[in-house]
Image (cartoon, rainbow, N blue to C red; front, side, top):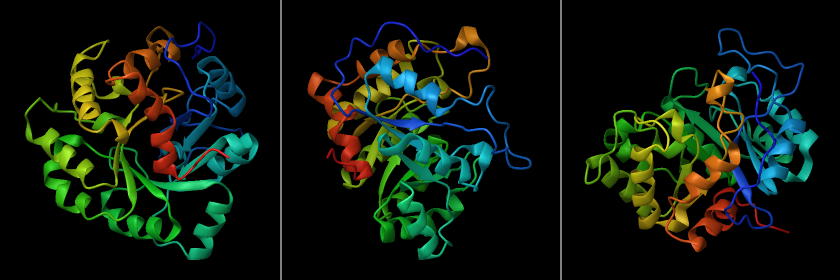
Length: 285
């Protein structure tokens, strides 16, 4: 599939060192795990992503372990090595790894672990507490993704997490999260606990309405007004769920659309820079 790389930059002011917190990047020589979802067409590479960075004006990136590679982080580590200091990674671990193994991952640029409790995910909510314990030992964060419609039932477990963690992809509320509903209330309570962030990335993956995604916009405006210091942003590049070129989003236009849901220029600046620095413990040097 042909991806879009060029075009005008975003209208949103982008601070120096801004962090894109949600990407998947690939190199040749790392096949998909048996039975896993296939690799994306064209293997979107570090070189390709560098074009996205130049267009958007971002300076740093979080690369997340792909579902295609399941628990084998070799492709992720190779991408981090190829990209150098502009990149950090979120790996797939189960919490059963030795401290030496985790230390080697950290040395390679890993700053977090991934829970993905949806079809194709490598590490489910069954491993949540074990991954949390490992993250605490390492000073890492956790990216947590599940059907947000279950957040009320999961709230007791989530509220006991000791690591910093981010609710991925606008919460993935597949059944909706209406204003005044229990799902939003649970999310706000979790955020108020002091160690939770909310990631604005991939709104098209869970919106029940077409662009401009009015349902996700309403939810995000509410959460961003409640806690602007807890919002982080990501491109969700290379948009792996988009299968035809005509549906492929314009990254600059999508960035402007989503960040316009935040309440102020100060909130947008924080979502691009200081909030992700706090979540990933990645301050500018």
